[in-house]
Length: 174
Image (cartoon, rainbow, N blue to C red):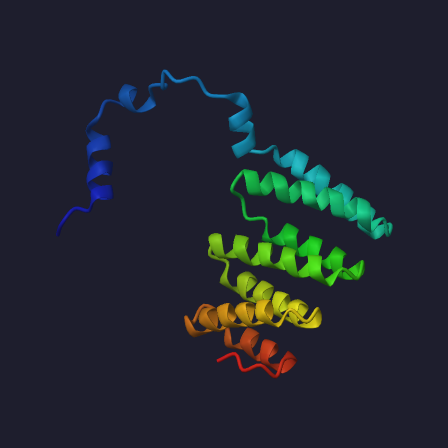
């Protein structure tokens, strides 16, 4: 048996006195920076509720602004904003703005990928490729389909999801 660096560090920390482990750093913590990295979940919940209410009332532009604010907060806090970007994509779709829909689906794919959510990344790449095809940006569509193929080939996407994609496009995905 051998020790890895992390195991060794853990073992060393176990030998330190508890006061050493719990001592405060002398560097002051910037409260604004701390708030940025740990946004108030109540605020996000309130914004989400407001965005949903506005969307259900048909006030899509106002709802869009609320979801954009949520995505900004989540992104700045290094949180997965894929679900929020999907909500933005749905609103852009309802507004008939396919180019913006494709762009926010790209953002959803990026966020999902960063957080290891392969199925959401695959779904986002597929829908972005379809949107780019619709607006006749074939280069962008091809790039998304290629990225989707790589994800499928890695085994990170369920067969059921791949069959669903394949049923909607003549483009071979595997």
